[in-house]
Image (cartoon, rainbow, N blue to C red; front, side, top):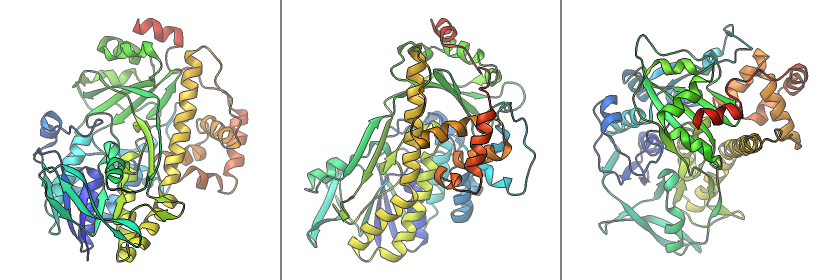
Length: 469
């Protein structure tokens, strides 16, 4: 068995550590933040700070695929989430008004998830890791770089250096430091050839408020969780312990939307959305929380079929990250952690074989999700920009874009197509796999061809500008 160092004690890093530890490896997790594990969800929300996680109190959601992973791999963590107040949510209850309530079918249980605010989720995973006999979490330990040696002409990572000057040796170093991982700088400083990196600003800005019940329980959704409303979108997410979040987001280039920082303007815009105004019936627990500067970024350590370094694995957002409105980050991080555990079972003894196998597994199982998310982001951003400028929505030309546009219309009118959408939204099925099913693409085109655009679900552009003036 190997000695493994995981950098970062977020959900992805702790999941990786638990899975590898339960496989018999000795795992050390190094976490820069010194704060102890909170004692309750309330303590986690009110007092926990994660300076290295910009989105710590931003909207958060756990997709059905993540629930399936927890049930299969970490059922004790699933039970702990329930005990901490995680919400058991049936995603098929969030349907467009044109469909109404769906009749239940065998197999629909796959659309049920458990979701919670990020501070609650991190608290549960951190407490679970404390009980792992082969996992040690060292908090308050900042890492400043990698230690390497040459192996078959390729730099091989043999550990890390900490801020105190300590060298922590490892057979494998796992970067789970998230969106802000400084790994490319560390590789450059270690004399490693540049890795592959793609990066662009996602172009979105978020304005979020959290709520708790004022009288009675949590409101029920009257549409999908993510709904486009002209030049902005509304994202409503159920959370743990009766709470929920509502986010209004648009293009970072849409300067008038900066007024949404003000609670009165934010409230006025949401109140003008007939399918969403009922979410205001709760008591707000935060001011408006803005977030911008979100990157779509992808990294790869194998270039032209050859690893630039061995002894290193990137997991979760340290590998690739996208805008959070689709909620895929934690889910893909959990999936990535299981794949790392699987590859380590057979390939860890040979560093080059491991590097190539880990790259292949990532490219096969994770990268298609990244590409699909970025394509969705670009299309929505182009629509935002066109509507803001008073132009017609851009018409898709690429065959995949044409089909995606037809899919978006058809899912509003057909229960089978909507279930397909729910599979994609829940990270259960990739879009490409959905459209090769017999007759699915033909059915989408048929329904879309007979469908008209739904009525506006919120203010027009002119009305929006008046509301935030």
